[in-house]
Structures are given as C-alpha cells and as structure tokens.
Length: 77
Image (cartoon, one colour):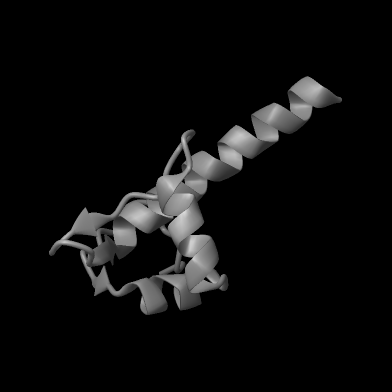
C-alpha cells in the first residue's frame, strides 16, 4: 500500500519531534506551521504546553496545504 494512500486510516500519535521528522522539517518550523493563520497544522493539546500530532491528520493537512499552495501559484502566474 502506498504510504500516502488516502483510503487508509492511521491514528498513530506523534510527538513534535516525530512529526517534524515525518515531514522532514525542524521542530521550530513544525510549531510555526501549527500556529499559522491559514491552514494550520492540526495538533492535539495534551497538557498546558504539550502537543501531539495524529499521522492521518498530518497527511490530510499535507494534501490541503499542497492544494492551497498550487492554487496560490496559479493565481500569481
């Protein structure tokens, strides 16, 4: 099965470090994406300052972000 197969459901819980590694970005960038105004990366607050990320929600976010960026690119040129 393809890693990004949209028909699969993977409720794997990831720490910020794991989610950043999964996305091949830094933890700092992960937190910036989580707090951005448009299409924020979904996260679950599990304590006063602790977040976790669900793998399937991260994949869904990636698809939405890709579509958003493609649409913005088409508008600009």
